[in-house]
Amino acid sequence: MAAVSTDDLLELATDIAHDAGAGLRDVFGRTLEISAKSTPTDLVSEADVSTERLIRVRLDAARPDDAIVGEEDDDRSGTSGLRWVVDPLDGTINFLFGIPHWCVSIACEDSDGALAGVVFDPMRGETWTATRDGPAAVDGTPIGSRDCQELGMAMVATGFGYDAAVRESQAHVLARLLPRVRDLRRFGAAALDLAWTASGRFDAYFERGVKHWDVAAGALICARAGLSVRALPPAPPAEGGMLVAPPAIVDELLALVSD
Image 1: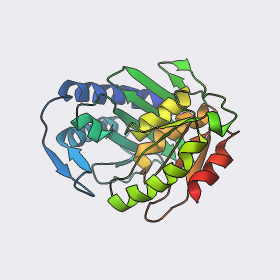
Image 2: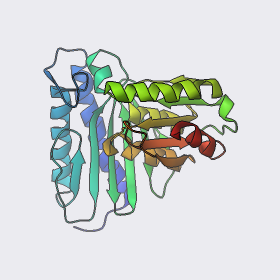
Image 3: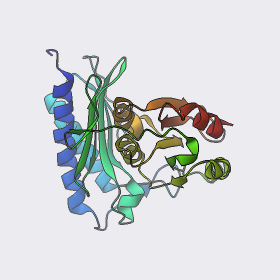
Image 4: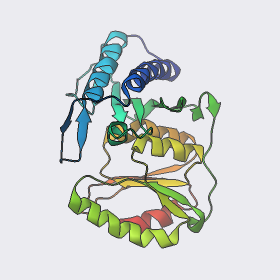
């Protein structure tokens, strides 16, 4: 297959995310068939599965030689050196509870990392995008993160695991962090947390236990918005994760949530 630009990859990802999001918006609020995954509270719906199927069909038609990895289906190998990372519905629990805070996340990457990424919020009609060599944007308008210089002034987003033991350990971290920052927020959709951080709605974000499809697009958007993106070490029983913050506070925040 001929070489393709990052802008072409982003255009494809955005078109597919918009189509997928429109379908999800149409069924939002309806009664859906659901099942449990890792725990009884970790749910997947027929909307997740059917939306990933739609995304894979579109990608296969446009980029048949690329690999695909997604949350709800088996990985597909490829020969082009490119791989699509798909979360068809980030924020499934919000979606199933009728909370209008969920999104579609699609990224394309090569051996060096993400090339293009999109996070689409169908309920607000907002689309965050970035390429490796271009600016982060929302609805086509370039964005930048808030230039927070002090941890004590930072609005920090986070998320929790599904396992009770993991949540207990996360509660200890939050108890240590809460007195040291402006405030904390937990909205339940990692890709949107990252997009909002890139837009300056949050100053920083951290979460353990996130999967690659949760953060692949959002991490690129944050990096292109000028934020530092760091890996979070495991804190058993919690797995490793991701932390994103302005350069001025990233080391202090990382130390505070890593003990």
